[in-house]
Length: 234
Image (cartoon, rainbow, N blue to C red; front, side, top):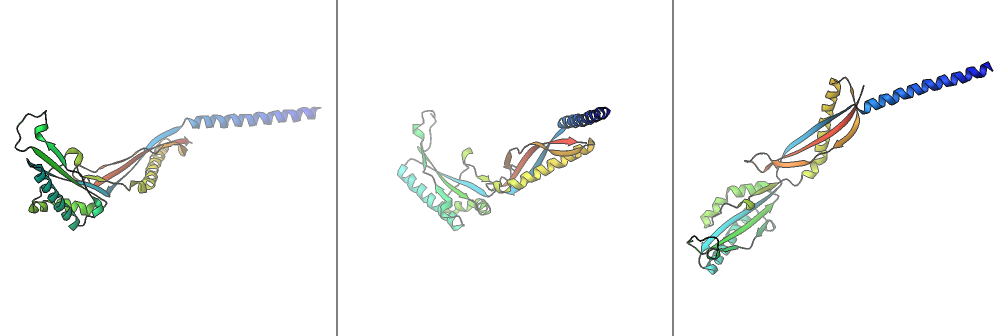
């Protein structure tokens, strides 16, 4: 009988000890769950644009519409010949229909005009050979010798540079951003006498592509900021 009581007491004691350890572990886990650090990681690269869209704008003014169309057609041929001669491919050139404005039909403009018609011709070059196009843009003044004046484009007809290959570098930049975030988190953990644990949550953030500055729109800055939350432990 006494032996039975001793065994029962021992089992109860062992159960109490195990319960105590379980409670402690549970409390430690509960405490550690509240110990988190959220950091941001940045990855940034400068790259050259790999696509350019160049609108070439030319105008003709006059009163004789058929004559104006002949002059516009001549300009169109001259500009295309200039582009092809300098290495632009035929499939990289698109010619828009001439836009005609009848100044006398503008009811909102009562000013007298020297000419009745204003015709605008837009030839657009779209190419992945950015360096070649930039070199031609720098020499477009040569068209003046052939009687073709290139006018300043409107706001919606500006030369546009793009970087369309950024998807290829996304994985590498994401890895770099996360590594930077981890380094920041490790430093935080060290300063708080803790150890960095696993990732609790992560937000990869949005990629942005912007001009490096106003003077070099053909150089792009690709940037991504990721937000990562880590748990900490002693």
